[in-house]
Image (cartoon, rainbow, N blue to C red; front, side, top):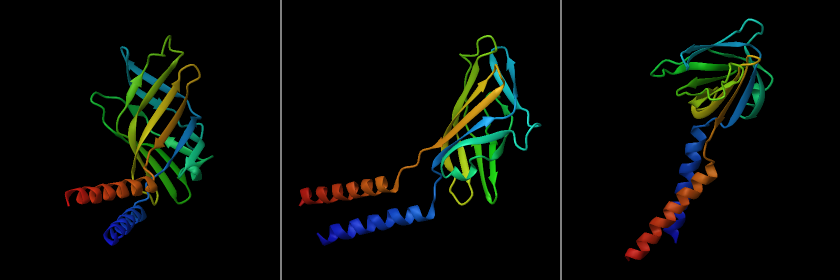
Length: 189
């Protein structure tokens, strides 16, 4: 029994120490595009999206946040133009948010283009994929994203979300593995 308690204490110490050194980004943000954009097609294939940044201090406005991104709610940010060559090359950074000493960037690592709702040029284009989020005083974190381009009024919206396992879930997994190893030892003897 003493050995089991030692293993439990050791597993908690390992979980807590690993979480103390790495603060992953947890949360999401959305923006509303305050600027228009243009699309470039080669036949039926979307090849570029160009954003106009002249009317505002930044060409996007962060209008919804959760978690670690709360500090950016109501701030302006910038978005880079999106070129979609074959094969796709990452865009680093696609989005940059600043608020005082804090900076967050989103780098695009993959992209999927859905033009099925494009219709007569007045529909929408939906882009989605994965990327890497960075935030001051946090570890870089994998994220998923979706962007909708409204072709009728030339506005865009974006949402980036992260999925990081909770420390308690990791602790439960560790305890389960320890219990499994002790059960196996008991069965052998």
